[in-house]
Length: 225
Length: 225
Image 1 (cartoon, rainbow over the protein chains, first blue to last red):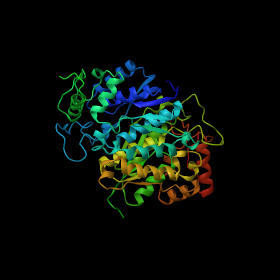
Image 2 (tube, rainbow over the protein chains, first blue to last red):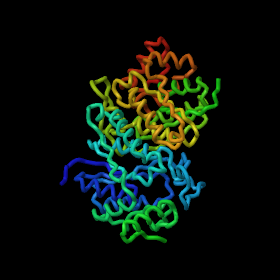
Image 3 (cartoon, chains in turn orange, cyan):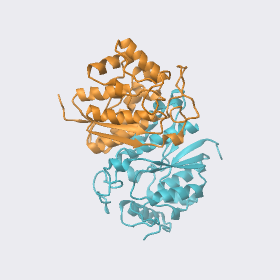
Image 4 (cartoon, chains in turn brown, orange):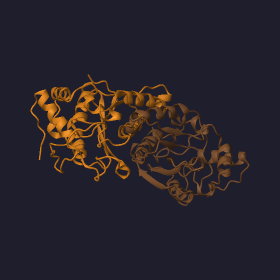
């Protein structure tokens, strides 16, 4: 069911974005994948993204370097802020200021050059309770912005920001990806994975992921250290 | 009239952004300046921005590196596309896909870390006839996005994207900056300035700038080669 349209898929190397890529491909898009090297602690997810893109048949995988570590302000980019091991109230310290705005803006620029109008991002319900830039109202506003921000938009082309996971639980995501043949053993979700991509098992991201496999009734292939 | 509030000012090193910085300072903001090294042809504007920031008393000047040259699609980042020497119809080839979206997104992240709610960008009427991301509707939409995208926004803080030049002609901008003491000899607007920051005098940007000084009745201090 190839529709021969190009899509940009934001690929972090984690469970959600690998599933998002599989969904975009199943919808028939020719997928171009984009990762960001933003000084994140969990460097091995970048390597996981690169390997997964090749494995999954991304037409082109690009890694953009960003100086977000210079800005700091997040446990993911500032080693002075510890990664939490239990969920707290409010927006987590792992929030990276304006991260998804920056990521989508850069994806939009690449999309425009490629002649693509479709961007996929794996934000989901579990995250948007905490991260402001994972909420549907943010995504909808960015889509409106994309149509004003670009030459393509001025020429009447409409961009579509796809968020196929937005209403899914982690268990639903695992079930969907498993059905589509995602090899989760290759993905890294841990906020503090080691150089071999082995997960800590205790950070927020690990706990959500592990619970997702349990609730889905799917064996957890995550490599823990 | 210092209001002790912090502002982020996008500083390219050109005439417009130097004037914008002077306006922000005159309004009493403590100004932090941000430039982007995005593989632009006109590298000497980066050096001009750095020098001008120090000269004008920027509290901190930051240069962020961006891989926009890898994406291409613009005469400013792709040396295969020549810089035009006369104005054409429609959006110029010097348009960089999604550039101001990317710049404002990164400025927003820094603002949030600094506890600033005020961003200044020197877009103006002469540009917005051509560049989609210099139009007021784009800026207004980005401001709405900023309030949805951030932890600060969720907590009820309102961001303000200031565009003090948006309704000014180039001559008005030159008059305003001259009144505020901007030293335009230190600024570089040329799309293809040489390593010493000397302007070509024939590209779109040079022609607009030169006409601005003429119409303002202000001697043009630009260093031409």
